[in-house]
Length: 234
Length: 304
Figure 1 (cartoon, rainbow over the protein chains, first blue to last red):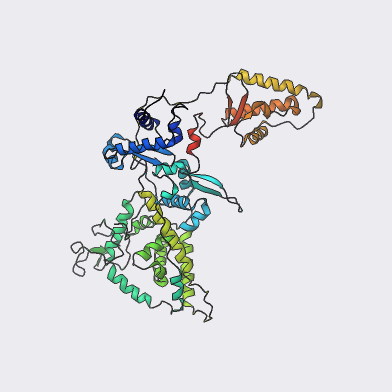
Figure 2 (cartoon, each protein chain N blue to C red):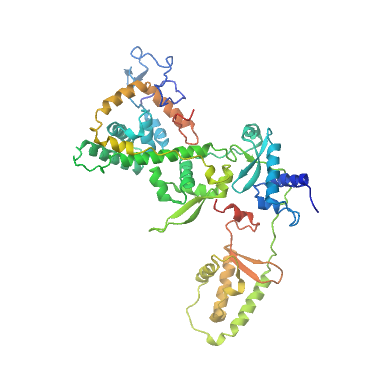
C-alpha cells in the first residue's frame, strides 16, 4: 500500500509522539514497508514541515544526538510544573565542571580533569555522570595504572538538546602569555601593591556589605553556583 | 560570638566595570552609632576586608570549587587582569583565608595548602633579583599559575554554558502521546530446564568418546570454571552452548562446566537464549539491565 505525503507525515508525527524517545531517520523510515519507505530526503522535508507547523505552538520539533523529538517548549515548563510531581534534579557546579572537561577534552582521564580543576574529582560525581548515561568509559590510557578515559554519549547530546558536540558553546580564548613575558624585563611589580590598595579602596563597598552578599549568594545557590558578575553575564 | 547584624544584601556587587554602587540608606553612618556590641565593646568600624561570621566560614569556603576557584575570585573581585596578578597581595589574602580556616579547625582539603605553598614560592622567586643574563627564555614565575588559572576559568565558564543549555527535565521535556502499554519487547522463548539437560546429556555422550583418556587432575572448582566460561564469552555476542564444553575433560569436567553455567545463570551474569524451539542454544554475557529489550538500548549508549 502506498501512502501519500500527508499520510506519511501523520505516521511520522504519531511515531515521534508515541516513541517516547528521539527517533533517527533510519528508525522513522523503518516504520514503513521496504517498498513504500520514504527516502531520507522526503523524511527531512516532512520533518521540516512539522517544525514549521509547530511554530508559535507549545511544542517544537528538535533534532538531537540520536534523532528527532517533539518536545515541550521551555517557555511552557513553568506552566506544566504543577502536573509533574518530581522536580528536575539539580547538579552541583563541580559536576558541571567535570562534565565540561569531559565534553570538551574527551577522551580524558580523571587525573587530567583534576589537573585542570585543581581538586580531586569525587567518585560520586563520576558515578552520577555514568549513571545518567552522559559519559562512559571509552578506553584506558596506556600509562601506568591504565586510567579510564571518559567520553560523552548520545544520551548527553539528547539531554542537553545538542545535535553534535560542535553545538557546544565555544570555549573562551586563552589570553596570550607573550604579553606577560614581554613585561619580564621591567622592575618587579612591588609598587603595584600600593596601587592595588588604592584600587581596592576605590572599588569595593564597605566590607560588611560584601561579606553578607557573598554569604547570601553562597546559601541561595542550591546548585552550588555562586555567580560572580562577569561582563557578559548581564 | 561576633555577629553581623546588618541586613543582608542579596546582590553580589562585584561587577568588574566601575565602582560598585553602595546603597546609601543601607549603610549605617559610621562613627555615630555602634552597629554591634562584641563582648561589651561597641564596634563602630567594620573590619577591614573580608569579614565573615565564623559559623559562616564553612559555607563560604564550600562555595568554592577548590584553590583555583578561590584564587580566581580573589583576583576577579579586584578587577585585575589575570595576566597581572599582584602575587604579594593575592598571596596575603589567600593565606589569610587558609589561616582563618585552620583557626576554625575546619578540615582543609590538601589542595588548598599546596596552592598556598605554590603562591609562597612564586612570591619568593619574584622577590629575588633575576640574574641579569641575556637569555630571554626565563619565564615569569607566575606564568604557570596564570596558565592554570586561565585554563580553569575557561572550563568554569564552559560548565556554566552547559548548565545554561536548554535541557531535558528542567527546561524541555519529550512530548508523548499516551500509548497504552504496548512497547515492543521481543520475547525470546523460555528454555525449559529439560532442554538444557538434553543438551547437557548430548555433551556427556560425546565426552564418552574420550573416556579412555581420562586424566587424573585436581578437583575442579565450579567457581574457577565460572570465570573460565565468562572469559570464553567475553567479547563474543553469542557462543553456542556446546562450545563451552571441553569434551576431553571427560564427565567430571563437563559436569563442572555445566554447574558453572547454571551458577552463572542463577547470578544473572549470563543469558541463555534460543532463537527458535529446538534450535541451537546460545549463551552470552548478560546485559547490564538484564532486560531483553530490543536494540535501542545499545544504540543509546553509543559514543556520541
